Length: 195
Length: 195
DNA sequence: TGTGCAGTTCACGCGGTCTTGAACTATATG
DNA sequence: CATATAGTTCAAGACCGCGTGAACTGCACA
Image 1 (cartoon, helix red, strand yellow):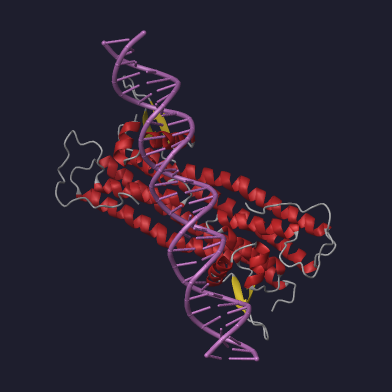
Image 2 (image 1 turned 90 degrees about the vertical axis):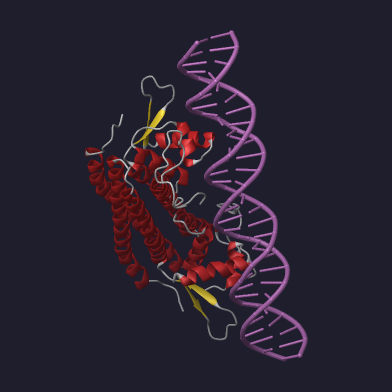
């Protein structure tokens, strides 16, 4: 919520001096912030989204320092964010010839990141839940004094869990499919001298 | 993470004195905790899940005081949790004749709660995102100096958002349908002298 | 070997959320 | 009406995750 949407003074649209690194164009700011919000909504860090958005919108790879300035983050922070994003395969680290610093470029599969990580969370997590419920059921059955209807309820809880899990998997799958179509479009005419 | 899964001393399975209110059976504890985790995972408060689970497993309505003891929560906390759950329609407040206190019974549609709230969050939220992106695009287009390919990227971001939104809606719908089947089962033979 | 810059790691502090506990209101009972 | 018990509200505090900034590593170049 820091520098969110200050729509820029009415004045200077032509204020683009060469020395002016580190100030986002208003439209960029809005877009970047929007992505930040979504990503946070999905359970990631807002700034992971902001970084990706910036890289994606710019097209050409940026250095950590540039990102730091543009988004007004700390050195350390940027380092960690980039590491995460890279591990998830949503950005790529490139070293252009005769450049002393790494540069980072956005991959188009932000979606892969979301589905992937959701998938992961879900895999480990929901599985664990189901295991717990099964355990509870085992325990309950081994007791002699547990009323029949309570056992029933427990079982039902179990099936409920299964169904939710199924729905989730389905969601992930369809969303992946659905989006992969878009992605091809993305790649095809992804303008800009990517490198 | 407080009293999670202490599997109960090896001893006393028959320790069920009449004065023994306020200690969950081990299997109950596990189940309750499991639900707590799921629910937290979905972005609610862990204790909301615990309360619902307890009520559901017990079958018969409990008073706030009982819940307070069983789950070891504060008076105030229970009050607020119950209010939330009731507002969402996942528990019901009943006043049995000749009883001085309210009692609360679980509805079977915990799922409705999840889908419903997710739906709500999504509705307001994703819509807003889309609006922001649209605005960014408008702004960018009105500028004379925005490179063509950047505009392209912005547009694509937009379509991406649309698609994700679609996928989400689909998820909610299917999961609701899918689950409603289970729910009917739930209701049919939901044992116990519910009242 | 020394200097400088890119990049990483991590203890700390800030900001936000959840829970508590106490003061308060409402309701039933004698 | 007095008293007790159920229920609500809210300020204070516990707790947790994130980003910061400073110390550190690694590498290039002289």
